[in-house]
Length: 127
Length: 138
Image (cartoon, helix red, strand yellow):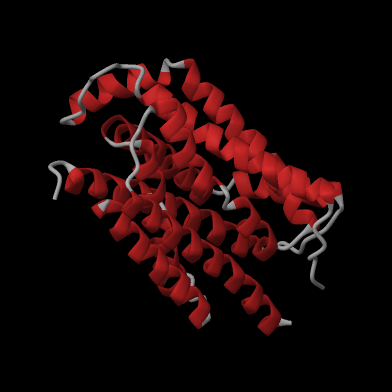
């Protein structure tokens, strides 16, 4: 194993985790408002205003910012092509978080897809 | 109701999003290289590094591109389903390595390309499963 690979992979896991936390905050905020898709501009603006006045959305934003900072550190250490593929591990975290926190149910096709991503990341790391 | 019809306009928007997505990652990489040869080893050096990265115009150009992509996706997803849009937009998984080779002079082994295709196949399956889920809910 190349030296530093473990550090880089851990940092990519960290940025993916921050990204996932941010997505979960956003999604739970949107779910909480129970918004029905509409073309009514006033309703859309009201929805956006309600959304940005929620503390959890700002928590999500902070995690997004953190994710960007860690991502920049990753890019300073790793090749872009490697980092970009390995960053797909957020699909894994999002699948786990959707299952555990948001209690979403999903099909076997999603598990297969997530499994292929895991295999892909392992191969990319070996390559 | 399913929105599947990919018109030429949508296809062009998706191709644009592929290219812009690739551009974002290229710009972020350039901003990370702003402090040439600098190595982040602890929080203090991370602070110095991030200050340099955030002073780089590449980073801000990248963030503006993020906003543009967001607008494009809002347009695209109002016209077609995510399960149709994502597989077309996943072309960036191929474009990013190509840009890395051409503009950043990175080297990519055959094994790594194989890994890229696994990741790509996985991403496409995950996005297709969103359609399955919605059909069940219907």
